[in-house]
Length: 101
Image (tube, rainbow, N blue to C red):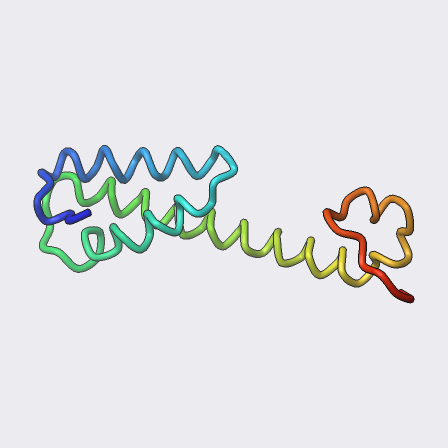
């Protein structure tokens, strides 16, 4: 999608939709929002909607970082304690590794 062709009001609307979509457990939308709208928010000359776009981009980046931190923490804990958790960890796993833990 080429953001250069969109009017500023539609850019703001699209940025807001991606920001709100991230709250539906879709943090990938926050990543897309940050990548697509970073230049619009911080590099382009000032225009009316830019302040709101900048807010959405900052909040999307913060939400994305929070998701990455939580997911990384969970993966680390699960991988470290999986063998100790026994049957509970097996129910949480999609695949059960074979071999000695």
